[in-house]
Image 1 (tube, protein in one colour):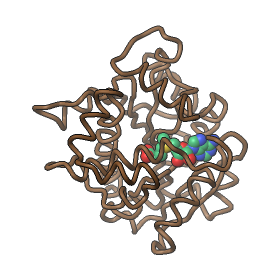
Image 2 (cartoon, protein in one colour):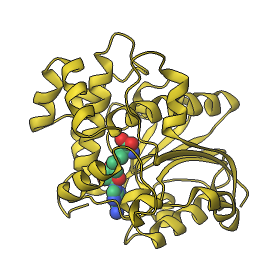
Image 3 (spheres, helix red, strand yellow):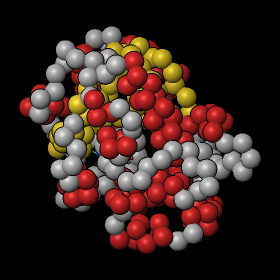
Length: 278
Ligand SMILES: C[S@@+](CC[C@H](N)C(=O)[O-])C[C@H]1O[C@@H](n2cnc3c(N)ncnc32)[C@H](O)[C@@H]1O
């Protein structure tokens, strides 16, 4: 994140979700996505969606459809968790995630949207004050303590809480990811998060589209800085107080949603479900 500038990668994700809405059979419904777009992203979203998607997928194979696939996977997982009973949902690095405003039944839980102040200010200008169940928490994972920021906003660690951390760990450093995992393990019920395979950072494995993605986010000023090792994930989480339930590359999750005309979906990007053991 560049100081004072809202996240560009968050705008990309909103653009990808806005494009998905204009496909004949979208993987999910997100009527908010296009409202968050600014500048060139807003203009691109007005062009024919299938053509834009084709151009993006050719130049940067993987990330566009990966965002759609993970959005659907996480929507389904959050809806299941809500139906089991939740008191709080904490969305870490929320960006332009609109789940607090669109998932059925989420308004019965208190939702905390945690994000960098620059990105959050841009989102609040769109969502305004309309949702009484949402509390905004502005903080920097690199310098602020998540627990302090949440508690100051009314978060309670004795309630049933789902933490969602989508598309963020790859932009942080090891210390920030570690302290967040440990806090979540002791303060929540379950965690859904994404990570990138560390092998693309050290070049020890190759995935379709990885080089283009790495180059693109670096030029945007939001480089990939952190990844995890899939084979060590279970142990890694256990040592931090979390029990692994599921760890899937998004290319495998995509098999559930696409039949013919399957786009490239980033195989180095993983989605994880974990239980908090404390
Ligand atoms: C790629 S976006 C993902 C947004 C959203 N979760 C999604 O999946 O669309 C990354 C998000 O992480 C936030 N972020 C990045 N670095 C951060 C930091 N050091 N502290 C707080 N938030 C940060 C950005 O503001 C942005 O909202």
